[in-house]
Length: 367
Image 1 (cartoon, rainbow, N blue to C red):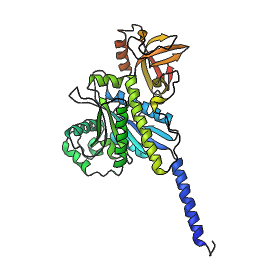
Image 2 (cartoon, rainbow, N blue to C red):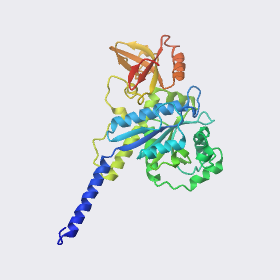
Image 3 (cartoon, helix red, strand yellow):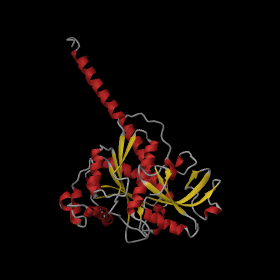
Image 4 (tube, rainbow, N blue to C red):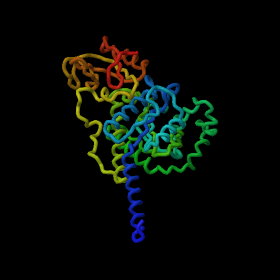
């Protein structure tokens, strides 16, 4: 080392190390963990004709597919991509183990008052209202299905209000970013004309151990017949997924700006993507090895207009193309039991309706 300029070399070495670290950090994928609430032996809230776990999974997979399509620098990880049970702490551990930058837990709400409707997004904190506390109690009750839950969750009783005092003393260093994302998501729901129940706080076990900005989304109320029909439908699920994925895009853009990462051309909102000749729901099917069932109602040698007489009031947006024919479908679920119920209802208008199955966007023979 030169005796005349020793500090120049030291400065240059430090500068080179800093630049290389920044390049490495910028090259790293942004990781978002998407958590479809409940699953397997835990159905979550139950409506008149559907279960929360199925709605959560369908919307979560669509959100992940939309994000992946719009952001090449984002890696999507699911806590579950099939109908299986995953413990609440295990969900947080998946996010932590993957060094996630964001955690989004997707749920469906339920109350005794069947007229209540709307979407809301929660961040971790002490519930300031009884209404928020009841939501947390219902979601946290999933731990009762876990083995040794008293030991695993250190004596936490999801049904006891006293247990929730612990959330008053929890310091979440990511609270500002979490609230920012929650606010973006609520704006997204409003853009799709969903009733806005706002950003709220409550003590959710699934959020307490995550080491990154985290939110829990309640898509709507399965106990409200109108909202249940919407959340079960392909159109409703697509809209809900687009609202969340577009909100993620806004959050990610601001995240990159603060880190000094050059912004690429802004991805088009999910509902503005060019048509492909195949419905959005078909193109963005479930993640690997997840079978999605639909009911085929009719086939046409031409694309039918919205409100076409042949559709008898059903949507013209859910279709796939096979051997030159436009094949229109109704309903979309990962549950074989639920799709049989949908088929039974559809046969009142289309007596020859039958079930078709898709995996990774491709039509497959049913198992």
